Length: 177
Ligand SMILES: [Zn+2]
Image (cartoon, rainbow, N blue to C red):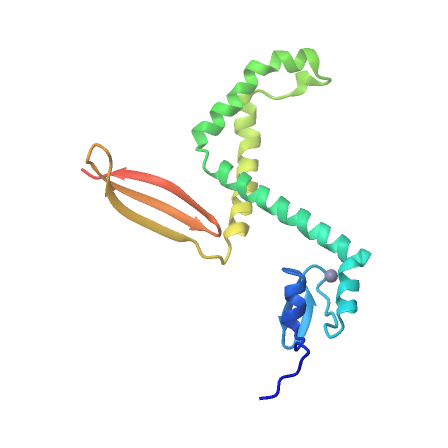
């Protein structure tokens, strides 16, 4: 069979030339960052797009957002795993710091004490945090893994793990009688 000497250029060729930048949809090549279709047949057009100011800006914004998203995930999971008792204990630390705030901060005397924080502010923060979690998990699948095993004292244990996106977390360890 006769073969043409020139390599056949396709969207995949361009996608390989710029990894993770483009996607193919119905024979059209789209830039992931700009959400624009880019003419792929000519290499210089594609290269030109990647070097354009608009593309570079969009890419930077995208990467910054991804970073922020990652940090929110870690923050959400860390705070969600704190029990109410731990939060209250943390808030109580404020009482020890109040004299310091009063002395060294402008308006430092206006900072409320732990009971006020617990009664007035905590419910509000909780509501906000709760709806944040609801939005975060909304319509997304969470895998719950339960596994029975024995610990090093040969007691039977049931481990429960939640797996969501890239995160897997051990949420409870129950000993069986
Ligand atoms: Zn672009």
